[in-house]
View 1: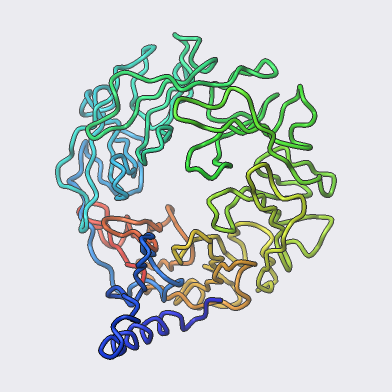
View 2: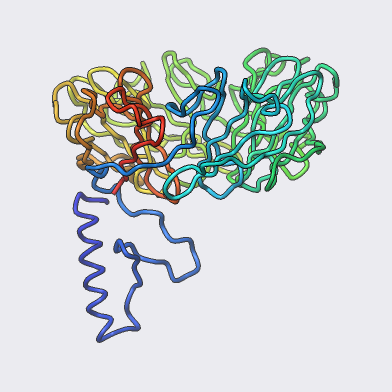
Length: 461
């Protein structure tokens, strides 16, 4: 169980190990500069340990490129005369700033995107070109996704850590979305000029698989239920087959050249409170979602509110663990902290009298329950967040304090992100950061330089 003194214990352990090195070097456990143990069995070193103590009190600057087409980079993304977003296109785990449309340059979105590589202290001052395939069916790739005559999106289907450009529908080629998708693999300098075919299963219930997800007669989506890192195609409802969504989902595993031609049955738990699991999330009498709570890289079925069981959302969530052939038939309880300020934890996030959400601050793939606002405790969101660490069987009963910087421009950091008002901020990993996300201020009405020459980063400690 994690405790508020974990980082102190790690520091003491590091000191103790250093002392023991002198007398017993063979028994020493190597540690990094922060006191975190370094694995000696070849496994990857943890990116961080424990939930940390908070954000730095003072920010450091993260440089921005010069404004272009009269537009500053004072948001995480825009879609006006200059359209851009934050992406990792080169698979190096650093966030880049990608301009995909520019009204002042017709080449952008037609022949290339401009990529400002993310570095330790800012984005590159000058962009590199990221080549695009030729337009198809009179449609340029001047957006990250479209759903018109050509439907496409960014998705890693080649399983190499890079985003691929995936065309799921083309009005000028009826085979796209019927028997295959067209994939332009992402490479060092751009997407491939010519696509490769990614095989699709046959249409079912008169529905083609010409989108990344649908909710009509056939409801399906993309999710990794096999835990192999590849997206699978999951049919969770089929009006032509009553068992789908009641007894099972149909799972078409993703492979190197496409989805499997025939589905595997993925077992579902019995309906509860007269609610079937025929969707990826429920918002009626039973509210549920797919979420990896046990850190095994599979999405589990998590029920967080049940009108027929008042303990759900009050004392626990019910976790149906994902396995190779389906979800567990019976749930395991996932413990919740006691309600606070008259609010239960019967949702994955709230922004009412109690504001909370899920966030992995411990780098172990288990989310923590983070309370970022509490109208019954003014210091929450003003001086600190309260973090309930995620553990094997639930969230910790008592929270740890996670320090916040002082309010700026009359705005407190009482949310996980805010894009409205006088201060714009979010949680991001920028530059060489690989562990806990930092608090990034990208717009400040009281400081015109923020969003024009730099962003302010409060590092997580």
